Length: 460
Image (tube, rainbow, N blue to C red; front, top):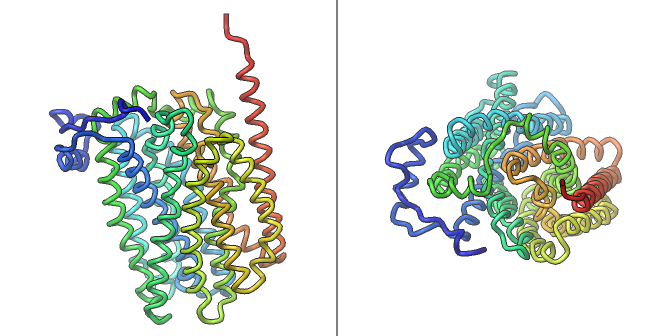
């Protein structure tokens, strides 16, 4: 990345302006003596922001397995309770496209900084509020409705947390390092997972079952608000500057109405939603689903041991994400995503056998699964969104991400657990394989579309 990508950071405009907030001005003053924002600092801001988002995401996901069935669905058997928790889990993914529309209006009228401030406070506030919820025994059905409402709040906020820095990194990356820069935002997923699972592992190991279900599980949710405030300042420190806004304008990274986006780039949005289907299905079949499967067959300590194994797997996933950048820069991001889909298809053949092979098989499942997940997830966001015209890339990348998570991941834990419980573990292999086929078909359509565009004669 060239040196002209550095941004001088001053105190900003003299007045607050229509797109400024108190937190934005505080972020500017806090770093007023800084000499400039370098690409590495933007990358760090992206990683911190994504880590906070995925921390909230995984805190809820892990609690959906270990806590919510006991607390909110005690009137069901354990399996049905987990399935109900996963049903509520999916609400956030349904809410995300709606959140994109709402926060798109805020972005266009009040600015990126205001949008980001509202979104991260809503995200942290919704997550922290869950920690105060009484169980069904104390509040009846109200507790379930409140849990669902706060989950929807998380989904709306996750859509609004899109700041465009990942697209800015991609647009300003050197020609031969676009895969490397595309993988940087993806590192937030394993970091967020390690933080969330580490906290839960600590409280599960330190407390008895009664204390953990009474108050211990609430602490990771408490932490979410503080982590989001830190992330907010880290991102506003970059996003809120006037100079950074000009760089966004130079790259034509501005929000557009969703109707205009779909009219001009609808096919790109649809293909982009299905292209990473194998990756996002794999995402939950390595993180959330196996924890639920092991917990349902827990003989006393398997859930804790599995959380520790997944921590190791997440470290392997970090390496896989970084390697994906190196590979993608040599074979292209589209080819890399296709290769990853083939690896996922191969993994789907062994996955049922590994999960049913005791602790050794489950360890191999997690470590190998995270390795393949890292390779595929590292390029899942940039492979198709790179085809957006610059005018539509900011909103297009956000909406495509929302739809990708909805189609590929939103119902994956629910579907996987239901399939495995009622038809056996081999159904999980078929589920993963179908995602791999969908990815390869979408990438094939995208490739033909790009070739037609490339061979199209210029207008007279």
